[in-house]
Image (cartoon, rainbow, N blue to C red; front, side, top):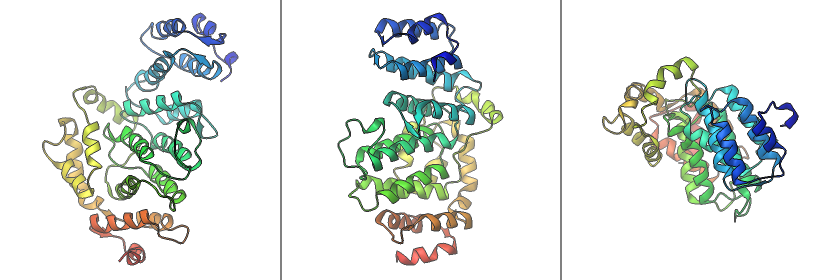
Length: 335
């Protein structure tokens, strides 16, 4: 972002000329930005520019930066909580160069936005997963700072990061694993297949891919009209789904279905979603021709069936009532 392209108010413009930011500077910007209760696009762009151009910043800066950008991206546009395709593309451009997030504070901001949003495109979650992929495979990116592990090995901490990304959306009600997310997980698996990875990676990979194939609730951005209809109950802050979604991933697909249709398992906000799941569950536990074609293309790309892929096939055999016949050659390899 070039400072000359921004039309800044006096306070922000003066900050942009500084070589360092003090705690008082950050406080002054906070008072200016939140003076009207809203963060607008010009202010958000200015904050990104300041974050990039000024290296010496007070310890108060990260909290302010994350709060302000999250407020703009998630809370300003109606309906609250909705991140559009357009704004998702904007924030991805703002935080990255050549597909890699430039700074840890920007990555944390992205995660906070995802965790706070109630609807967003799957591309945003996939982009965040790509940052973990860069960390794991190449040892690059802001997350690599202080990481004590050899590139190409999936650690327990890496798995925690991937779970955080996946739960960031799921924790607000998006229960499926999207195809873009599944593609990233498969890429990580392909690139680390021969490594001594943490066992938690096998568990996450096999279950997440299985959910992407069989879960009936897809992870896609809703229309603005649908999001507006949902805004009223989303405003009920008594509804908390994060702990519930963490428990969902602890079991198999059948446990997933049982938890979703249990009368008292989650708040009333999910009643209609539960009913839809109950009706669709019989169909969703089938892996159809299109899904089977994708899996056959993805699995064993290098001519070998690796441990995680075998675990995935075994999980599918155990959990799905109706696998497509085109998967039979794969199933025969894991007798």
